Length: 381
Image (cartoon, rainbow, N blue to C red; front, side, top):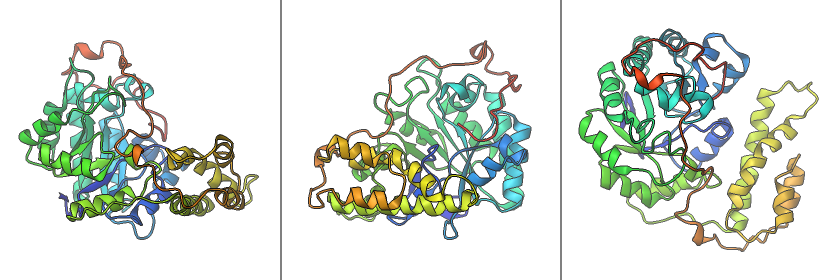
């Protein structure tokens, strides 16, 4: 698989996840296997206004290549200016545009998964990004959902518009915005999009194990896969994916002791990253901040293992690496990986629901105008 000038081997992309895919997590995953690891989504408005929080989020490790950044925006002019800044200043090697977020604060402004319905506005945004990135040779891709709901599907038209505008690849999360993270992904939509487009199509949705990725490629003909929730608490999934695409049946099945080593590594990387983010004169130590950021990962790492509730609770409240070491030492290192957890959803799950949209959004899909108040402030999504 290629994304512009970059060959992606194995054909695996880490999906950007807010609060998750920071420098530390991406490094942890890269230590397991190769691929493209996308930074947390940032708003184009935050880039243009040089918001300090946004600019801190556009951070990459020295050995990251390609440096992949996902942006969000609703105003073609702002998107074009932001992408131009990133490309001209060499802040990233690849830019992806988010058209898949189903979060109400995004869709009610006409952004994310709602935006492709306004196909002329969608086209203006994609063309602005591609044109701004072209002089620097930075490839632009998009990630989208099937549509707003089953009655308002957009992926075919949006894919063709994006291809015509010059994107180098299209990723499809095979759910509608109304599905959110519920139910099962409709892989047949990925196959349908593959049949329509000439540019590479990446499939996303329900890849919990490496064999799921192989099956998706076989069933849909997609050029590669995008992995999100499946790697939460399981960064070694990228080792499994590398093995699978390399023709090996080897899969990583770590004992609880081996998981503890990965947890310690993750926390250490977060502390190191926090040291570059926080004024050392501040009231909260960088170690405390990094450990606090790690807390949300504890339940994912321990999912399925026989670890008592009190120990889980204490691990999810750590404030220092020494405290983490003490608690990890209380785990039984010989407990085998819970194979019963294989193939099951991880991370957030919820019920389908009505998509929050701007008033009158569905009435005029050809409207090319930016809806009033559409731009999110600074970083978010």
